[in-house]
Length: 141
Length: 280
Image (tube, rainbow over all chains, first blue to last red; front, side, top):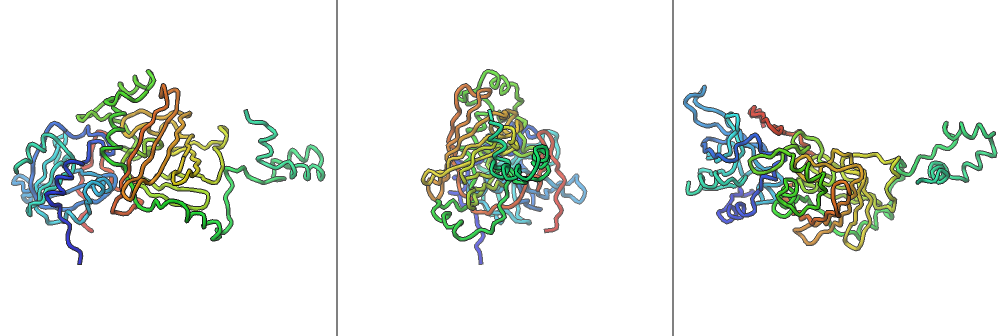
C-alpha cells in the first residue's frame, strides 16, 4: 500500500524558495491580474494533471448560484514543472479535498484565475505560482 | 558553390553513369538519368532497411547513461531566458535591429513579453524549446541520438559522420537539422535550418532567421544534473556569438505524448473556463 504523499512544512518552504517563476507558464500572464489576489474556499471537484498546464476545479459555496454552488477553475503549473520543483504527484490533490485557494483573478471577472497558494483542511500548504499579493494574503491564514 | 559534377556524383556515381553510357546513346542517357536509369536517392533521403544487428548496437553501450526524463531548471534556465526575452537582461548582444524588435513587444504584469508560439500550441522550435521547461528524454540508436520533447517536438541528431545537407537540399523545420559527434562523454551538436518562426528565447516574439547557427555541448554532470552549453551565431540577431549555459533536472514522472492540445485552455488573451467532464 502506498502512503499518500503530503507536502511537509519543510517541503513547502522549499517550494517557496525554488518555486515556479511566471516564466514557467507556456503563455503570457496577460489574462490574469497579477497585481490582485483573491481567496476562495471549496471542495475539489477535479484536478486535471494535464499538459501544458494543470487545472484545479473546485465547487465553492455560493448562495446566489443555482444549487448553492459555483464552479471555479484555476490554472496551475505544468505537471513536469511541479514535479521537478517539489516532487509533486497527481495524487496530492484528490476530489473531495477541502481547499482554500489564493489566486490572481481573471481580468474579465469570470470564475477563475491562476492558483498561487493552496491550503488544505489538514494543514498542508502548496505553492503553485509565487505572487506578492497572494503571499501577503495567505500569510498567517 | 557546389560543383555540378560532384552533385551528379552524389545522385548517381560516375561509375554507374559510365556503364550506362556504354549501353545507350547520349540522348538516352539524359532521359535515363531522370526516368530511373539510376534510381539512387541522395544521402539525405536514404532510409536504411537493413535489420539492425547486435554489432551495430554494441557501440551504444560505451555511451554515457542519459536515462531519465529531464526538464529545464526554473531559476537557472527558464527564468534567465525570460529576462533575455524581455530585455531585463541587458547583456544579450543583440543587434540594434533586434533590440528594437525586443522593445516593441507587449508585456504582461510580470514583465513577460506576450506572443510565444506555445500559447497557441505551435511548436517552439530551436533554440527556444530547450529553455521552455518541457520534459524531454534521449534515445540512442546506431548513428543517431533522438531527443523526444513533451510538446511533441523531436530532435534528430545524426552522429553517423554526415554533415548538413547543402542549402538547396535543406528541408527547413522547427527543430532544424542537427549533426553531432561525441567528445568523450560530451555530445557536440551543430544545428542549422530552422524556419524563421522558431523561437529565439522562450517568451515573446523574437524569432530566428534562416541563417541562425547553434552549437551545443551536452553532458550529464551527475545523477541529478544535465547541462547544455549553447552558442548561437547569427549576424542579423547578435553582434557577437551569444552563449549561455542551461541546467536540467530529472523528473520522477514519466514522459507522455501529451502534446499542447491535450488541455490547452489558453490563448494569449482568453481562457476557456468550461469545467471538465467529471467522468474519470
